[in-house]
Image (cartoon, rainbow, N blue to C red; front, side, top):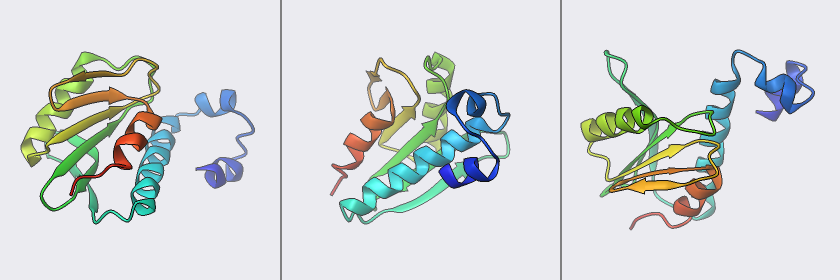
Length: 131
């Protein structure tokens, strides 16, 4: 992410937030950090993404063998309930046992199998993978 921003001559956060691709950049950064956290604990995991023809998607699916986690990334400080509903619908399609809606929120919230949290919250969970 940092190299891309340098190549695109993005000098600061204010400029970055004004770019039309900032959401994709944030998504890539979160995925990179998540996979890095998993490699530090040597977790056996197969990462992939999921998308249906009718636009249901999950940005990062982590398959630990006996357990599957769904991670959706949103560049917002206030995730909407509809974001969690869409994540849960797609996560049900793949049988995910844990669901994370990662955003820039300062107020984590949970409900059943689902957790809305910031990147640090996700990393804390990834440092304790299943199995």
